[in-house]
Length: 148
Ligand SMILES: Cc1cc2nc3c(=O)[nH]c(=O)nc-3n(C[C@H](O)[C@H](O)[C@H](O)COP(=O)(O)O)c2cc1C
View (cartoon, rainbow, N blue to C red):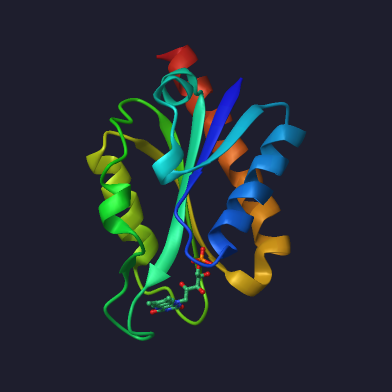
C-alpha cells in the first residue's frame, strides 16, 4: 500500500505535521512519500492508495480564515477517486479553514475521508489520533467497496 503526504508550509509546522503523519503511516505498513505541493510526482499520486493533504491556517485570528497557499493547492492534479485526509496547522483559532480545505480537495475530485486542524503545539498528541482515524476510515471504505 502506498501513501503520499502533501503539504504547504511557510515556517515548517505543517511540514513537521506531514512528516509525522508519514512516520505513523510507515509504522502502519505504508510505503510513504512526503512532498511539498510544488514538488509532486504525478506518478506517485496516481499510484497512491491514500493521500493526506495539509496546509496552514491563514486569517485574521478570529475571522477571514482560509487555507494558506490556496493558489498552490489549486495546482494539485485531479484526485479523482482517491481517499484523501485533510489537515491543517494553526496557532490560535482555525475557524472553518479545515472545511475549506476539504471543499478544495473535493473540488479536485477527492473522497475526503477525514479532516482535522492541529494546534501547532499539540502535534505529538493529535497526529497519532488523526492517523488512527484515517486508517479506520480507509478500512471502512475498503469494506464498503468489497460489499458493494
Ligand atoms: C499571515 C498569517 C496569518 C495567520 N493567521 C492565523 C489565524 O487566523 N489563525 C490561527 O490560528 N493561526 C494563524 N496563523 C498561524 C499559522 O497558521 C500557524 O503558525 C501555522 O502552524 C503555520 O504553519 P507553517 O509553519 O507550516 O507555515 C497565521 C500565520 C500567518 C503567517
